[in-house]
Length: 260
Image (cartoon, rainbow, N blue to C red; front, side, top):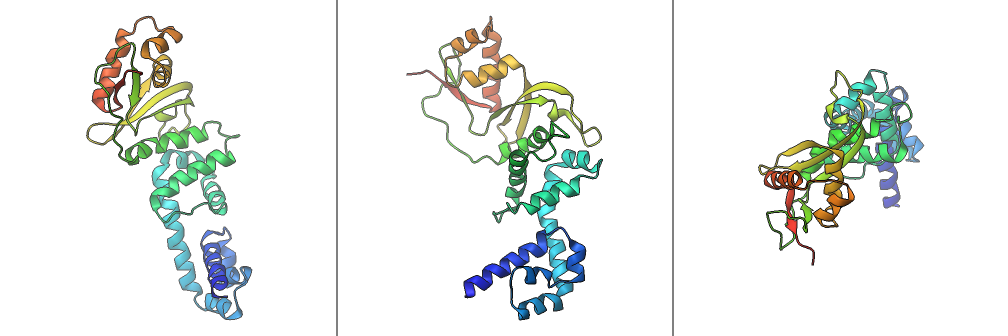
């Protein structure tokens, strides 16, 4: 019985914080308790503590929304220009997807919600790419530390595989979403390839790649560099090897491995 009451109380508090209709809650602070089947005494407590409940709602919502505003400023600017930011955030809160107790998990959860639902992407086809690009460096910076595989060497050769550093990501977008600003949030329609990595100081960095280089870095993780270059009709491997050396020194590549 106690567990059931506790569960209903948790749901009522979640409803108090996450529901969109603030005016209805202001008019009747006991509404959330009533909707979730709490007793008359609990409903009365919600009403009697109405001012405190609404203050709690404001603070709790702020703690959920601020990470989104901080992590996605360009997306916020884009949507605010058409008065769609608040509806977007409310739709995310309505989905009740936040399970973690850590603020750092709110923005990735929001990104996953955008990917799953497709919210706004009929109107803005680049919206998911924009959100991903805004959070990309943060995800790389926060990636857990891990030791590279054993047996790597520093100088690449045609017969080697490329082993990326654990935090490194290679991404491709159909829009140049990494170049937008809050004042100009609509990106150019242009295929864009990026490598995101942590440098030796642990700072996240982005570098734009040519399509051929991005494809080579992906393929050369599972087939020798020379074979990958041939498949991609890259005639001269020397400039590629120079770039790979630079990327290893910068921290994007852990090293090179000769297949067994």
